[in-house]
Amino acid sequence: MSPADEVLRPMLRTVETIIDEESLRARLDAGERLRVKYGVDLTAPDLHLGHAVNLWLMRHLQDHGHTVVFLLGDTTTRVGDPTGRSRTRPVLGEEEIARNGQAFLEQVSLVLRTEPELLEVRRNSEWYGPMGVSEMLSLFSLTTHAQLMARDMFRDRVAQGREIALHELAYPVLQGYDSVAMDSDLTIVGSDQLFNEMMGRHYQQRLGRRPQAVMTTVITPGLDGGAKQSKSLRNYVALTDAPGEKLGKVMSLPDALVGTWASAYTDLPDERVAEIAAAAEAGGAPARDAKLDLAAAIVSRYHGADAAARARAQFLAVFSAGAAPEEIADLELACAGADRDAASPSGVGGVRIPALELLGRARPELSRSAARRLLAQGAVRVDGAVVTDPEAILEVADGALLRTGRRSWTRVRLAPGPG
Image 1 (tube, rainbow, N blue to C red):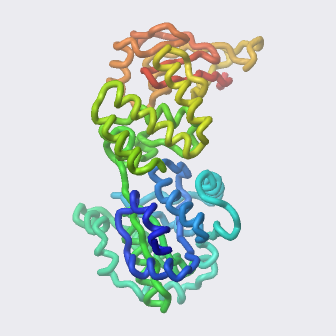
Image 2: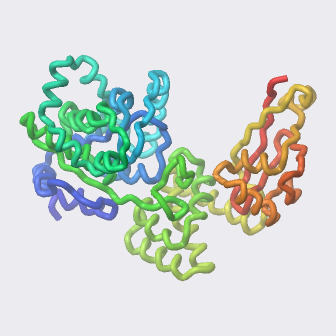
Image 3: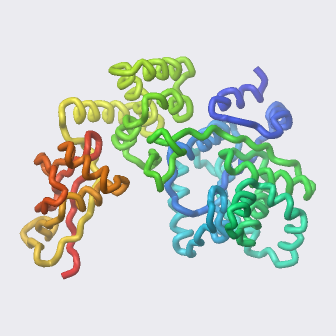
């Protein structure tokens, strides 16, 4: 097996396309140490399993001695990436950008190795901060309006009569030039970022550099079987989720996606992935067990085999024997001054709240009609007592355990409110 095959073959399960594969293979066969570009804009720092597909490929490259150059896009965040947006993205403030940057660093370290020779952290303010107007205009002169408007997203917005701000047209230029400034040899992105990274190849070539290779990776449906994982759709498994929460979320996955997720989000051998996919398609108990195997493999990848075994045992105890899970998310409710009880540990007594409102606070992804159906089905319990009337006024104590469906548990925490 050639050096290039040794590196690339284990990656192909989650790689969709490789731009300039021949050159990439030649560099790997020659034993070159590559600089792998990984750039993020510092918007919401909630990395999930979908993002981690690329991170694990980069980790694989690190294990072979290559360096990941992690770019914190503090300048491009102020511009706003228009990718996937039908409207202009709002721009964040300095403090939020700095806070998000630190959160990103903490989350990528869950996957990437952090030795200085394997992980280099850069910020694009390093080159855009001191760049003058004449230099910026010179950079813009290397790109035509027709090149930028070739992007389908921009064409769609024009066809719909929606505005495109000038800074949005500049964004692919800035992301592309990042590849020049970072001396990038390879970048690994989702297919939605291919246009911007091809701009990187364009600028490297125009400025006399060797162009980076570009890998695009598979994008899989989220937990609901629809769109890709997204915070706004609440259909994702976050890297920072606790082991039990990861496992419980994966258990809500449609059976038809078990094989797809096993291939994309685990390091199980191909033969085992095929077995899990076949069992999931069979339905019934085999499908449940296959999903448990998938969920445990995902947890094990991030938290270790012991944590996966504990999460699996706890899940079975909760959903087979009716026990409460060990890891329960908190729901904070404000309690008016008249309800405070100085004798309680929290200094707060109870709160009166309509059942439908409490359910809406605990499960904001539910529509009002879906919440009413859940109540009518007897699937909502407060400290074990079934609640079916959406208009009922509940007396909820600090620490009350709220169960809303088979897999959703919340611990109410009351905080002193105004008054």
